Length: 399
Image (tube, rainbow, N blue to C red):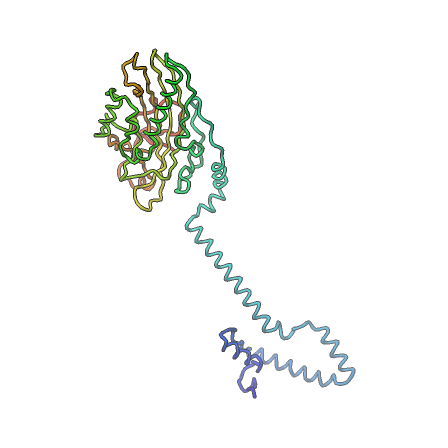
C-alpha cells in the first residue's frame, strides 16, 4: 500500500513518487518538484469545488451541464502540460543549448587563433586573394616594361602560399621563365653558333641562380665550367671570390647563394621573369644580353621554421661567344662582358660575406641597429637599368 500525500507531508502523488523512484534507480530523470504551500492550498480548494460540483451535477441535467463545461475548458488549463511532455521538451532544449554553446566556443577558438579568417572576409581581402590566385600567368617579357607591376594586397607569405602578396605569383616557375630568342646569323657567326651561345647563356643563368646546390651555398661548378678559364676578370675573379669573398670580389655578382646556417629556400619553386636578346659589335663574336629577376621564398635554417621571407635578385648580364679562329678565346666558352646585380630584402650591412642574407619580419622588429637610411625602392620594378638604381644601402617597400 502506497504512502499518501498527507502522510509524507508533500503535494506529490503516489504515481509521481513511484515514477521518480524507478527513474532514480535507472540513473535518469529528475526529482519531482514539491509544490509550494500556496499551490497546495489552491489545489485543495479546486478539489473541493470539483467534488461539490459533481454532487450537484448528478442525474441527466447535471451530466449535460458537466459535459458543456468541460468542452469549454482548454485542455490542461489547471494541470498544465503533461509531466512527461515537459521533461522531453526540457531535455531537447538543453541539447540544443549545449550544441549551440559548443559551436560558439569552437568559433571563438578559431577566431582567436586566426582572426584574419573573419577580418579578411569583411575587408574584401579574401576576395582579392582568391582573384590573385586564379589570375592567368603573365606572357613572356619581350621588351623592358615601362613601369613597375601594380601594387598587390600587402599579404604576408605563408608556407602553403610563399608568393602571396607578390607580383611574382603570376611569373614563370624557375627555368621556364628563361626563354631563348630565335637564333639567326649574327656578327659573322652562323645560326648554329648563335644558338649555341644562347643555349649556354640559359644554362649559365640556371646554374647560377636556380640550381639547388648553388642556392645552398655550394660551389657552382656547373656554372664555372661554362666560363672561359683564361678570362682573369671573369671566371678567374669568381674563383677567387668563392674561395675568399670580399666586397671587391663578391660571388654574388654572378651567383645567388644563401648561408646554409641562416636560411634555406622553401619549396621547389623560384619565380623568374625577364628576357634575353643578342647582337654583335664586331665580326667573329655574338653578344648575348640577359635581364632577369629571381624571387626566392625563404625560411630560417632550423626545424619547424614557419615564417617566410622573400629575397628578390635582379641580374643584368652580358656574355660573349667568339670564334676562336678570329678572336682569342677558348672554343665554346663564354666570356663575361658586363654584369650588374641588385638584391631586395637583403641585409646589406653584411656585404662581402659571399651570401645573401634575407631579413625576416620578426627579426626586423628586434634589430638593435637602426634601419638603413637610404632610399626606398621597389625590387619588382624592371623599368630602369640596374646600374641606375641607388648604390646606398636602403630599404624596399615590398618583397
